[in-house]
Every structure is written in C-alpha cells, then in structure tokens.
Image 1 (cartoon, rainbow, N blue to C red):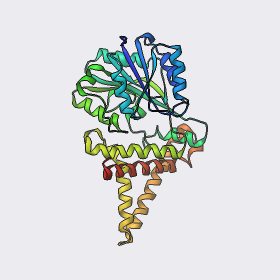
Image 2: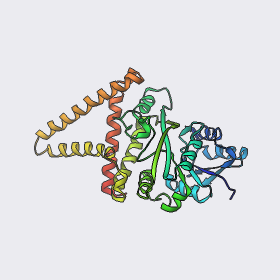
Image 3: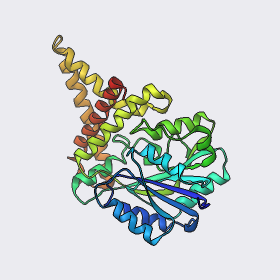
Image 4: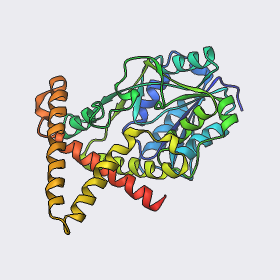
Length: 328
C-alpha cells in the first residue's frame, strides 16, 4: 500500500444526491491532497453512487471505491482501516460537506495531543429543499428540545465531550481498542467512543471543525431514522450502558409512561386523564420550544414544529423500547 498520512473513509449506500458534493469538499481540503487515501466504501448502491465515485477515481489516483458486503457503516469503517496503513483515519459521511480545514485541524489536534483518541467538530444543519417540512426537519436538529442535545449540534465551545460525529482517530488507538462492532447497524459510534474513553483517551470537539449536514427531507424519513436510532440505544443498554446518556432515555420514559397510563386506564379510567394531562403538558412545552426556535428561523414553522417534535420523540421512544425487548 502507498504510504499516505490520512485515510479518509466514506461509507455510502444510495448517496447519488450527495456523494459528489462530499468528495468535492474533500478535494478542497487545506490538508495536502496527495497525502490522503480517500476510500468510498459502498454497501451495494442501486443508484448512480458507484458510477459517480468511479468517475472521481478516474480523475484522482487516491480516490478509490471499495465494496462493503455487510452494507452497514461499522463494517465500512473496518474495511477502510484494513485497506490503508495511514497513521490517522478520518471517518466522513456522504450526507455532508466539510469545511476546508476540517481534516487539517483534526490531524493537528491528534498530533499535538496524544491523549485525544477522537477529534471532531460541529454540524451546521441544512434542509434538503425549501419545502417547509424539510426546513422544519433541519430546525429540530438544532433545537435542544428536538434532537439537538448533543454538543456537536448546539455547542460553540471547544471541549472534551462524550461523542463527536465524523471523527478522526489515530491508528495506534484503533490498534489498541480494535475496530467498530460489526453487529451494530446503528449506534456503533456511541459504543466506539465509550470504548475510547474507557481506554483512557479523550474525545475532543473543536467548533472550528465544521461540516454542513443535510437533514432528512420528510416526516417519514425522520421518523424512520429516529426509530432506528432509538432501537440502537435499547440494544446498547445491554452491550455497554456507559455509552448511553440520560438524554437518550428521555423519549423512552415518555413513551413508556403513556403506554402504561393508557393500558391501566381500562382498569382505572383516571389514568386516561393523567395521560391526557401529560400530553397537554408535552405540547405546551413543545409550543414554547417551537416559538423559541421560530424567533431565529421564522414563524412559518410554528404550526409544524410541535407535531414534528412529537413524531420524532415517539419514534425514538418506541424504537428504544423495541430494542430493549428484542435485544437486537
């Protein structure tokens, strides 16, 4: 293998709308381009993703397409690691565009701070289209009441955190703790970051490291994504409870309390009133959160956001419950 300084691993599956923009942003990086081994690890796309990547590969010798028979992102990460000997590995997402200094700053932090086991930055969430639902989906990713509780969604300060998206890892750390778990279709980053912390390393977030991430475009897509994310949390409770934070469990508590109250209401009808009271309180808080968000993003979203909050919280909570019950 050619000696590169950085292995860039980009898992894909049907990303024809985004992969060209992602690769263009990697090519524009201030980090020396010829020192990057850029691997698009594809899980069997049925659209034009592979064709687009192949065209980039014909133009640039260090952009290559690898196959991922296992399809999921954790396996793609491990394939990228196995196919490069670069001392640093940066795991990117095809659904995003990266600021010009993204890789430079990641590598600088890792070089200057051997105690860092993972370095990443913040998301600038954008909508896929000007449609009000797509815009509202982007907003709820930036609101703490929505799904914006993680530091990389809302923080403006450099700090050691519990997780970062699209991180950069020293090869020595991966050699020490192993690759990502290939039995986790979701939540693999939570478990991996927990393993990094247990090994004594820190996870560092630098707000100067930025990417533009495109939120899901429809209610159905967001609900499906949140259900899958919630399901992974339910399973992680068995695998590594330390990888699950309190914020991950709040939707589960909300859904479980409603299910319990509605079920027991058949015996004690008063429970139905209590459930109704919880829902009224929820929507009151949701409206307040929506108003607060609309001050920044525009009041045309006011009638949409409370219902979107409800859909994604219920989807996440049900997913977590299913993950706990099924353990898979």
